[in-house]
Image (cartoon, rainbow, N blue to C red; front, top):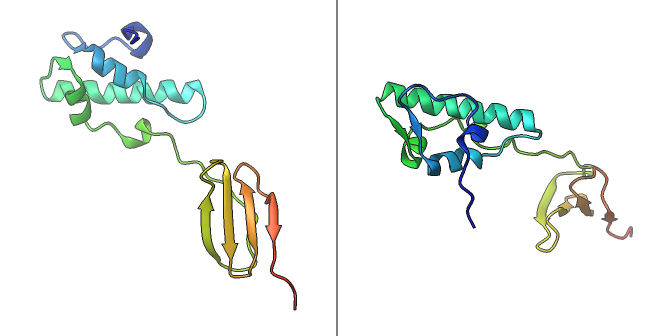
Length: 136
């Protein structure tokens, strides 16, 4: 069951006089995610709202609909959360292969020119397992 968006809970400030946010556009704004923490999420939504409303004012648009929202081209850094990065224990040479587990999305297998194969939980810097070729 879909819940009707409440403009008072979604919009950061009252829209300018004569501008109306339609419910589908409000739903888009409500479903935008940002970096960690509620403060950055609210800030991103506020930036996007201001951007869309400025676009509407410049183009004499009176209703914010999903097509208008998209045409306004909101800044992508506000639309999408920043990419997560992780530093993992390095190999003794170049990494030649990487593969995520199809069963556990946090497990990464890496193979290096040093002959080592390492299995990482990407949330930890040190490998869970490390296999080395036999020494002759």
